[in-house]
Length: 331
Image (cartoon, rainbow, N blue to C red):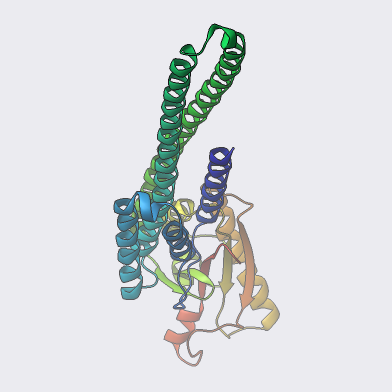
């Protein structure tokens, strides 16, 4: 029963950690640690307090070293995708150390049970030899006692067999869990590789930055639309396909906002309508390019959020833009 509860506790921890990390990490410009790093720290602390410290210190050391590497990468660059990947690895190593500790403890209990069984056999044999030396008058009583001890021994053997069966089931479950962790790790690495390649390609045609809202992809309005129009230019479609590839590489939990902006020329109501119409044109193209319509919405900001001085032609050109905001998972 104790081993079963240990297994349930381990699987519960494993499930909770998987849900936490499956959510992705929020892109933000603050110095707060990522959710992966926070989860890795908590997992290591739990592993350090578990049986792993005594039974599998080498695996616990590997988890500590992996966490140190993630901390060092985070200290160098808190927005580094590598820091999140290293934290993810440290988190998994801590879970694996705890699993190995549980396995070692179960094996130790099995060895102890086998030792007790042998001692019981020796005790029974000793008692048998002693009782055989008794007089014929006490043979009846001796036989009854031996029968009782035999039944106890059979019950003990059955109990040991059940424990060994439980141990084998636990080991098989841990093996399957480790295989699933390996597949998840490989899939995550491939997704991050794909996202990095898409973002590198995207930086050639757009400005990409991180702020409190998330990842901001800024496209010039002059490249996307004719003056005072909202129909996409042919060259815009080529650029927006690269944007769609990058957006599809993000985790599906990340929501997307397409925000249209204008300069200060013209009435506020006209600019509001124009900016919304342009944002909707971009959204429609991205949805047709494979971005889930449930993830993406369009808004028109008009001239309300300039990023440059509208008094110069260059400033007005910078303000005529479309921002594609990939929000953090907690937005």
